[in-house]
Image (cartoon, rainbow, N blue to C red; front, side, top):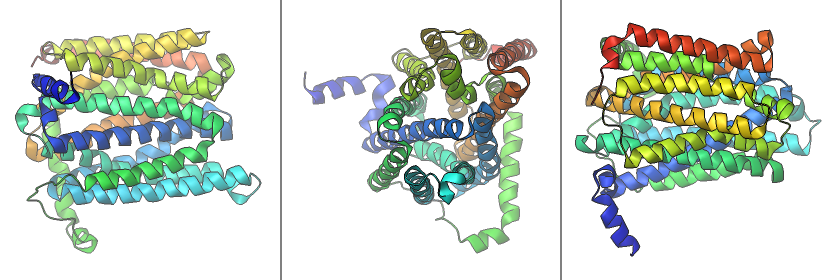
Amino acid sequence: MSFQNLFSTLTKQKQFKSLILPYFRRYLFIQFILSGIAGMFMTTLLYQLFALTHTSSGVALLGLFLIIPSVIMGQLGGHYADKFDIKILFYYCSVALIIVLLLFFVTTFYAEKRPLSIFGHYLVYIYYFLISCFGVISGFLWPTLFVFFRSLLPSSFIKHASSMRTFVNLFGNLIGTILTGFFIAYLGPSFIFLISLLLMLLIIFILQLIPVHSSKATVPNLEIETKQAQSVLAGVKEGWAIFFKNKILLVSFFLDLIVVFFGDVVAVVPEFSNKVLHVGPVGYAWLNAASSIGLAATVTTCTFFPINKRQGVLLFICTFLFACCTFLFGWSSSFFMAFISLVGAGVFDGMSMIIRNQMIQIYSDKENIGRMTSIFALFINSSNFLGLLESGMAYKFFGLQHSIYFGSIVSLIAVISIAILSPKFRKVSY
């Protein structure tokens, strides 16, 4: 069977129908590259911060320097994504990200060549500053991506296209994370930042091939927008008011916030792989990619066999099993057991993520999707970044493995409590 015939057969199935749109295929390619960059970027930062500070607490500070700017700017990002030309906003975010990656490359490369230079002595502080800049960009980039995705598709395509987008996102992140271990071992961290920079240039080129027809205003003059700050704040306030009235999104976001805040183990993976499992950078990269492997497996399965009912109950089950898997990870004494535990955590996290992504697309009005996405990003980023901080603080009090036990048990109690207190959410089915 030729590729053309295979593609024609594939797009006749409803879960792949959105692939007939050429602009959506290009968007998916951009999403794949961005996810690969994110996988390489975060894996490299976690490894580098542990190498520079020699403690999980130093890695945990990554969450602090990411959450503050991303939370503050995320609300503005959602407002701009709803009100102004989405393609121009994407250009601005891409250029800003290229500048930050260039600075990461220059400082890391110079520190590798001259470790006794000022860059070598203060590299960790330079990283924290640049991570904050990345957080600011993320606050605008993620709402922009969601609105861009929504602008390319008719409403009837959204549900299945959302699952496909999640799959591409996870697959790209998985590839980037796995490759990072080999790049660190054989080429050095600075090479990863260089590759990421070149890939961002490719994204800008592909973006020119996607004409987005928008009636929104172009990106506003900053001076004018400063004078209209009251209007911006009113838009953000309106978005939060709409969100709090939507009990389905409220419960799903809050559940994710609590479980990932206490159950996240990303900050301790570098130290766990080094001091407990005694593996090098390649082993660390595979361990760091284990969750993404589980996520990818789940999303692939759900692409062919979509979740069509009882989403509310299923979300509680998945978050409960996620916490069980993180507990098993802390109990692991071998690489195989740790790897399988994180793969399992990724499987259940992937299923809950699919459900949440569908909920935000289905239960949000089109004119408010940017603000709902920014709030969604706020909860996701808060849980992920605060989870890094919580891991570092728990590590200080309980030690490496006991901090994982503590977070997992609290997560299990939280899931059971929210499930009992949310009878209407348990009945959600679409």
